[in-house]
Length: 128
Image (tube, rainbow, N blue to C red):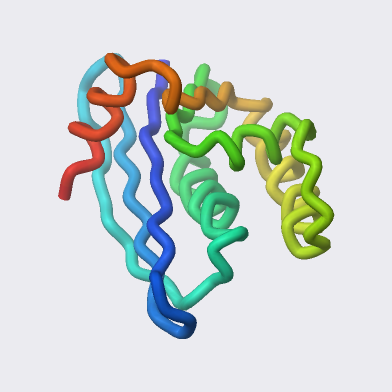
């Protein structure tokens, strides 16, 4: 089983780069850990942009069970389709994100924001 931990860190100021951190484990063995700086995106889109970057990195593991662990309730709701946002950019990007998820046989996305023990593990794995 593949476990991928993900976070997207938006900048506080318009025009500054955003930071995407992820790490990928297979059966508790670290396969990849990276921090990427990318061009500015609106804060409402950072979670989805981060997820799309991770999905690209997960392509080699296409046939395996994949769990993506995030600390982002908003991203989780957007992916599930339960978000009530009226932001057109967010909803348009959500369609693209769901299409990319379907190419990986719909990996499981787990939001650990409500589970303190899992949140600590998520945080430790994403430390630079």
